[in-house]
Image (cartoon, rainbow over all chains, first blue to last red; front, side, top):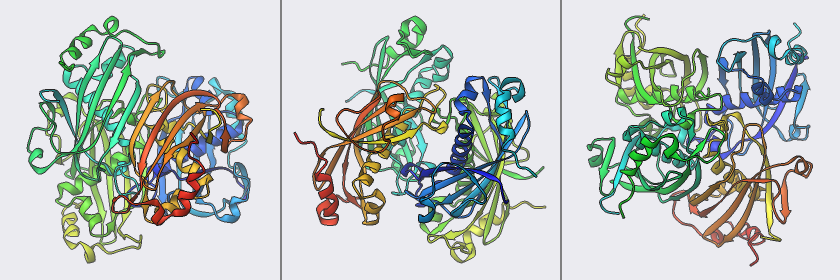
Length: 159
Length: 159
Length: 159
Length: 159
């Protein structure tokens, strides 16, 4: 887990994201995973909007989530995202949702981070995706957007 | 207000619809208005899905909501919907969201109702819509789906 | 997988549950898992609302989801839920989300089912939970609601 | 409309906020109104979280929305919020949701603005609120949080 490059995206918990337990409704963490990976791809220089304009979709085929501590209304949250594996057909991400501490809030809020994510770990998980076309048929990324494949190749885990 | 035909649709409040005030998050009533009008149109014999398959969309252009009492998790709710005005270009609905009482729960749960809606009034409101095509250009309903216009003509207020 | 008792809950896909891919936004399946388990517990005779009124909460600690085919607006969906393991401290469910066929729509819509769920499999998954009190401290179900523990004991897999 | 003080809050449209029309699902604008007013109150120096910690709630009693143009995925949006009237019992806001232009994106993203809001107007509206205690009984703000009433008094329209 040392030396990996994580992308960091900062959000504040919205009232609409809470439920009557007084915490963030659990499915919102899966939304936040999506925010993390689309903001990561944007930082790489390829907004997900452009991907869809090329006729590509990147649906989730599997997701796993572990809920350790709840996030609460108005807290400042960091979404950490990292690519763990990719090919012209598949793409995998891991995520950590952390509550930012006062010290960490002074650190620049967006962009990449080398090393371990900061703050109290609330939720972590992973999603696996396949590239499909607008008819939901599997598609090879190198045929449609080789430049994006190239960008991702810099992000894979170097194991 | 007497003698009008209301359409009734029954739902139960979902946990995901609550917020940390311990009540239904207020924007969900606007979702419920949509459920009411699409279930009404279905009852008339014209599912909204078919409307979109014809290339028509019915976006909301104005909405008003009055919040009187909150709905809570697990309550049985009745959405009452009525057409108040329509033309080949426009369509207007009013809504009442009511908490069903035990007696009312014995009444058939779906379909039309002549006279005043039943149960404690929680929220009421109205939405106004225009017909547009898939490029969001205003469209005349009589050109694209005259049979739907015909069905609606039986529902307008007879003032 | 044969001979197990599944609980079945019927829903229709709401417009608010779609996204711009033209299918159900993926996090909603996790909402539907929750609907499945709370409706199952209601069928057992113990609405989740009563559980919270006793000061108990049942947060999700882990979830897994596999997305096979997307559900679409207006489709009739069956949520199948089964308890796979429980103790006074923990509770585990598995789920299948299936698109109902015309034949299956004639079958009674709610309640229990012995044997394999019906319809095209769209999504499946599992959630694991722990019982906590209103301060989020782990709690033993047999101390607070032994009658619910008794009800669940009839639902566990008989392997 | 000249010379009023508007508070500006910047967001980017999330994928989860879209629907199958390919635009932002209409109820989300009501969520954004809430974001606007809570961020405005934060800027005044009184986070809404603190208000709830004092046992006060500020439910919406009426809302009106006019939808002029849809917002779309990934667009940069500005939520403009202004207090139009208040008393120890009531509070009213108006809102404008605008799509930021490239020029406007160079302007500082948060905080107050004297004069007309910038960008293409997509949606506008208003909400009216009353102060209640945790039992939903009407409460006078000057009894519970006179310092907040003082802060708001600087924001009212000077007509």
